[in-house]
Length: 200
Length: 153
Image 1 (cartoon, chains in turn blue, orange):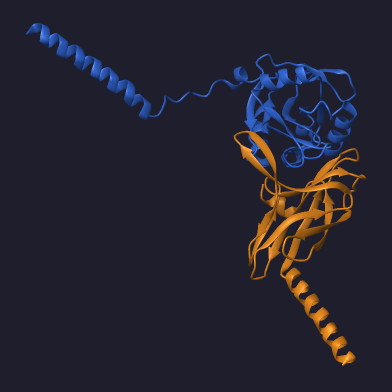
Image 2 (cartoon, chains in turn cyan, purple):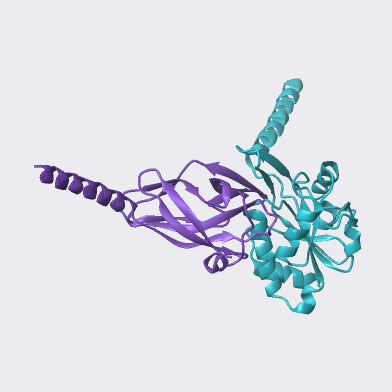
């Protein structure tokens, strides 16, 4: 009798456990609290690539400046110029003194076409205190990975053209090189200007 | 008799021309602009709003532009934090409706620019439809886009 009760209790226990486990599939997973962005994105606060005059560039060279970093390519028909246009509009909301404390860093994910000369012309044309960076594919991939960004080359129908799908997020670094804010593509210049003011 | 056949022929030609015109009629293009790019750039994009006031849908199938080796219609799709671009074979402009070619959406991609473009310059484009005459458009080169585009952001 006692033995039967023990078996029944064990079965009931197993049943409850199974119910809890199965039930957990149907309820929302526990919400992850936002990790500290400074630890998530490029935690070293540095990387080395090649600048627009062909010289080595280190992110830490920009300590003391607010850095707005994003990935792209100069043949990008829409996303990159739209991002640059948005940065320009955000800059228009700031004073000259505030703009002086900002640097835009454009990391090319297209080392095949974007040599330092092409990059230099591109960033000079669009202004926004931009620096264009390139490197070998391996060097660029390392930086892309550090920011949990992505890109993929999409071959075109013509030999002279291919496009690249890429992360459009702008990473705002504070003056110590920590990523403090991720400016998403749908956000407005006003939101970016507000975030910049916070870290000036 | 000869005169009659000539006048009939003339009427037929007139009729055909008027049908072709009627086909092109109803399409108007507003606020056409091309993204300004630096001289070494090989590509850029054209944006505009195409209105169709006619009773039939219009289908844009391609465009011609003297300053580009290849012209394609593209659309953009933001997936998570990644922007994806793809070519489309046609773009529908519904009857009594419009299609907007604007940043973050459809655009006419100009690939292989044969010469640098200057801000403020008007560049002729020809919009080619499947079912009606081509429509000529002058698109103005603008570095930061059109004012209507700016107001959306």
